[in-house]
Image (cartoon, rainbow, N blue to C red; front, side):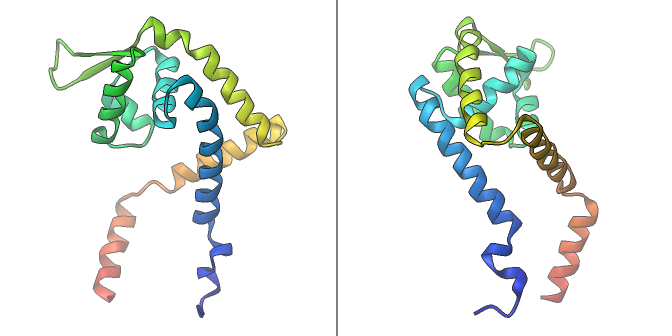
Length: 159
């Protein structure tokens, strides 16, 4: 039995967020499966609907993922006909991702799915937006910076 109250699972913010995220994603999957896309593919499509075209690196950054993580998702979406990928004429290392007509057409169906998920939360619009804003603030606050990296180095010295 732990001697530290802050180590109890019920006191873990990270576990509460993890469990809530898994519940929401599982609910999305029910509907996304019918369309034939995964949750990560859904997230990529959302970023593209906001801009219609973006680089692979920009998409990875927005989704807070590494480029090697996003690349297979983009490849699959391209095979499915939702996006096209093209190397930049100015810099061959840059991959420009653009929605196809099929990618644009699926947006309405996906908007309906998002409405179902939002409704399932049983939150009012005000509470829904407040929770979302709080989580976005938490995400920004938790970004790792130089002070955090220095603290890890100091911790290693103590172990």
